[in-house]
Image (cartoon, rainbow, N blue to C red; front, side, top):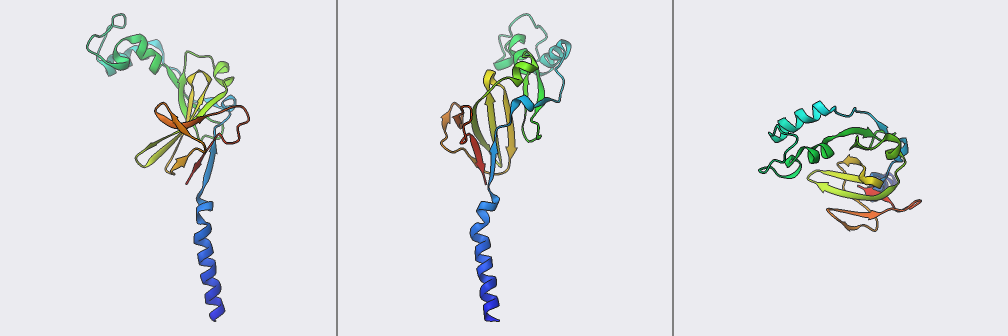
Length: 171
């Protein structure tokens, strides 16, 4: 009887000691060439309607002197909002990528960096490709990137072809 209790106690301690290894997830950036466009690009009429509704400015030719950011003029707004939803092959990553770029140009781009952006109760793993395209994974796990440093607004690292450390470790 005593040995069964000791055995059970040992197994319980072993379970708690090894639990963090079980809870760890490692995420690598997806191959953008295998990602797919799952949403359509907005038409010019839809973009003009969005500009009017969001920015409260009808004139797409003149600059709005009272606005800030993308509402300053229609060309800035169009550059930011002329996007379509893309998804990685496994469906874990998604992002709104520019409709001004051809699909084959997006799919040919190489991974440039991986970064994390913590928000309250949510972490984002951001994979940035040539040309600025970003595919993002959202998770409730706290994520870190080995060898990361501050890169602009996010903590991350630059990636090179075949870089094995270009990954996010989340717990």
